[in-house]
Length: 168
Image (cartoon, rainbow, N blue to C red):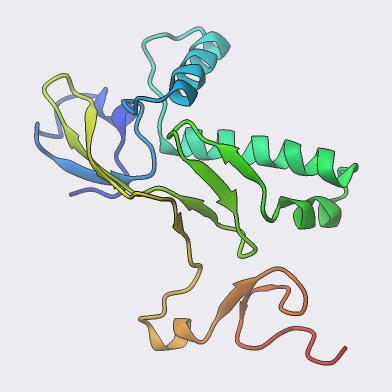
């Protein structure tokens, strides 16, 4: 099982056998109106109809759309103002799920298991019912479990063990 292989990587040859599994948040083979529009937009943009989309491309698309929404909300491109406006931004992603930007700078996204089929693409054989909230730190590792990623007041950090602003 691979954790960063998508439809695009399969086009390079037959190094991944039929039946191979991969875990990701997006596959081009997902059936949703949002994905159809995303694939068409990508093909129109680069005029390469035979090229496929992949998870990092979908993540970039989501991030840019959320950033644009945050700029409109903040009414400025000032980094600090836009960062604050990013939290809670939502978008209906090509995956078909509504994803959200959390205060830890990570997205809540679906989890999917894909299986390589005979056409050389992934068929989704399992997916989470809802997007999963990403954690920046693992509660299973002792040093990591002490850390918090929260960019809102009073924490304002990506790896604190206590709030940055303790006295206010």
